Length: 333
Image (tube, rainbow, N blue to C red; front, side, top):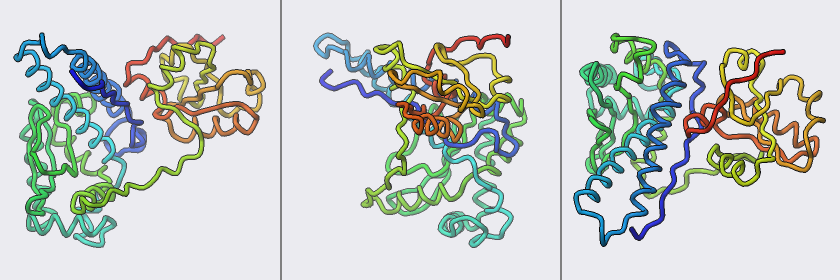
């Protein structure tokens, strides 16, 4: 086809998986690395296939099937990214504080009350829709209609959604999203999810949806050089001499069974001891578990020592989600 293959990069996991209330780190990371990661990989493979089509030869049914599947998987990727980026807040304040002024952007409480009668009425309907999907598949969504400026709840099966409406909140009700922690108790999972919603993020989405003329999304305050996991993989293909440092804290590294293939683990608390062993002639890539402060701090320290160091956005979890190679970590000597 006459288009370039569009590659979708795995986003760093937006929430801090260890900090969520009632949702285990194991559940969130498995969901991110496997379900979301598989969706991203599938989307990229499918787009490569579509880009390589010869329209003069491809049967119409084949083109139709590929493009339908591309749309479905693209929606799955987008919904998963919406899901993870919503987590990390104190969602319970919206329901226990009595409405506006309860620690959440007042616009959300006002908008929910205007569209559903009250925040409690919205929660009751949203939770009921989510529970109705238990042991099946689909998403429970809070949507904003651009046409009438109202909020409404929606069930999305097979990753489909409503045209000309913006999803503000997405709850994954496929069993992979909760079975590790909750088994068949989908109701407990729904309650746990709502306890962890960051309503400030939901409010930001509402403001953006209600003011579509605004294209100023802000600029990332990022001065420390970094790379995505996809960029790291490309660099390793062309420059196998690059230095890759696994900087997960010792207590965290000891719990894991594997690590990035070709990486060397170094204790981030002892960077002063091992940094002198690194070569100044090759770039150093530093990753931690999820791409948060540890990898950034180690990379910054190495740069202070004159090395060309960059941290890996998303860390090891994003590497796995992108399908990156892994190897068993070495046994302690």
